[in-house]
Image (tube, rainbow, N blue to C red):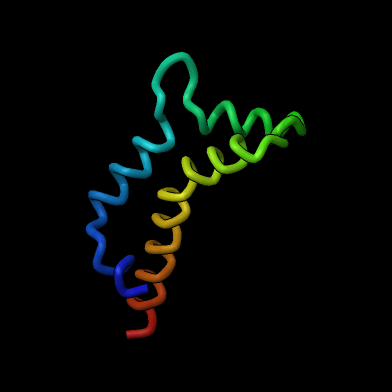
Amino acid sequence: MKWLDELPWLALIAIAVLMAMLPFEPEPHLIEKLKMLADGTLSKPIDIFDLFWHLLPTVLLVVKFVRSRKKRGGS
C-alpha cells in the first residue's frame, strides 16, 4: 500500500471530511445512510454502495494512521 503511504495527509483529511459531509443540504448522505443502517432499512444496493462510497476516504484515513503508527513504532 505504498500509494496510501505517499498520499499527503492534508489531501486525505480534506477528502474524508468533504465526502462525509456531502451533500451539505438537506442532510449529508453519510448521516442518512447510517440512520438507515441503524433502523434496518439499508437494503437497496445503491444505498449500500453510497454508504461505502462516503465512508471509503475515512477508512483510508484510519488505515493510513494505523500504518504510520506501526512504522514509527517499528523503526
